[in-house]
Length: 268
Ligand SMILES: *[C@@H]1O[C@H](CO)[C@@H](O)[C@H](O)[C@H]1NC(C)=O
Ligand SMILES: *[C@@H]1O[C@H](CO)[C@@H](O)[C@H](O)[C@H]1NC(C)=O
Image (cartoon, rainbow, N blue to C red; front, side):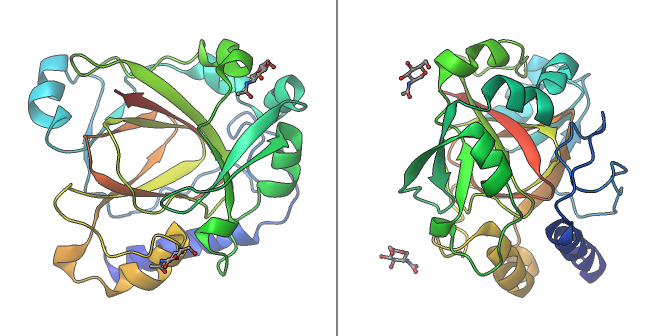
């Protein structure tokens, strides 16, 4: 990443962190952002390959499935699901339901149940720079499929499965600057419904330098700038309409650049 793009990204996160709490409801951001909805198209470092919807299943299997991550654009149309994920809509449907939050450290120890409305009003705030991952509660996964099933039915997952696997969804919403620090698991997809999510990845044999108790934001601000070029992650930002595929056991950390609504499809 050049110094320019690095500063640019930082600026982005800080702008996101400093927005006031006013909520502007618009169609383009689903009511989740605190600013207006003209996303800046920054020239940023993206070292994940990007493909459009013309990619075939054979190409996916041969070039990526077991080898490297890829971002695919426009492979599905989730506009109906997106509109159901607008802030007002979700609050109306799920406001009183409990959701399970996890701490945002690598080995997610703690779980806390709160009503969805309370999460949106009190927890969905920008990441505090000084907090540890263990002190940051994050809504991602642990979804109650009985309660959320009718919403997830409207989601169209990426069409390319790995032979012998099934997809399992993990849905979440998180504030600007939040994210999960480096960890790994099986293969899958990540899609952003609202907002932007930056991804940092390393192949399975290249364990990154990181403190599992610290947030991705602190890693990006403190560790990332010191990395020699050869030690940098493979990285990119995904936006609505893009899915990122991560192969089995690849290390990854995520950073939500905006308040983001997102869903993963784990292939297991
Ligand atoms: C999921 O939701 C259903 C219906 O509200 C409830 O009965 C059940 O206890 C919930 N499951 C968990 C694990 O919380
Ligand atoms: C992370 O936190 C755990 C639990 O508090 C502690 O035992 C461990 O030493 C910490 N690890 C690092 C690398 O700071």
